[in-house]
Length: 431
Image (cartoon, rainbow, N blue to C red):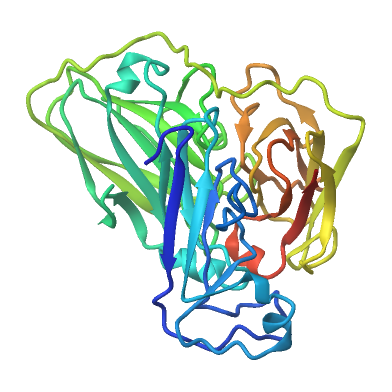
């Protein structure tokens, strides 16, 4: 955990065994399976180096190879020698004093091995604490649980490291808890949402992708008609819930299914990824509570005006963006300080997950239809499902600012198998 304005130092030591598989004729294939790096998903930090230039920051082009790894090919050893780090590397992430508080996460992000490594749980939560006095008292005083939906099941993380797979959460009648949930699935159809149908349990969404809305949103009990409105998470998304057991609840045990395989923007199939098991017992508590749904908001300035320059991006079949696989060349050059509107189209017939590094975005349209001012999907995110559409390409439209940092970073599908196979482009912000 860190506070806004903190500098986060991470020493990454690669103790994975040497595989000598970094060289390949096709870099959009699985390779370098034990070569790694570190991405701070959702943080607004430098995509290159710390401000002094001495240490790497959120630079996903760095490769930290295992001890004894042989990297003989010219493509890696000559063209990319400046990004190779032997056995270990120090990363330094500098958050600004105005950095949003919220639930973020970190994971491996070396192209060609991202999917396998995240699937093997090379990932963890990264929490930027709330500023004192900002959150309502009932949220500030709630005990917290950090839950990661992973391919192995649901993991209750331990702040000291590690975690418990498929845990049971114990609550007293009247107790209020804050659940921070991270969808860290990497393989298969990695979407997830909750199905709740327990009268004694009240669940309200109080943040999405680490960013707080202006009002909490009640999670509709048992409503499967519109899973995106029922807290659906694309891979990479996070949501914070404030959860309350009714004071008159009796001792009981129940579970909340975590459903995955959301196949269309407003449709689903019912495979259960895991369950949140809850045990209610003990003396009733008088935890702070409020019926007032007002929240402080994300702390980001609204984007009312954008430049006339707009971008159209197409998620294409065969793991392509705009019909091309990732080639390491800059596809979008953007001046520092620009505010732009992007429309991300999807012509593949399946739902994808658009993610951009460094800068969050504000979603305004889905499938060309503008979201109303109070629609819960009109919000800040850093990862968004891009729906399919039977009548043509589905789409989302978003607005974003490119502020604070220059340098190269990426946009990609956060179904990580798709990213490794080429569904990625490079962006450069120039000073």
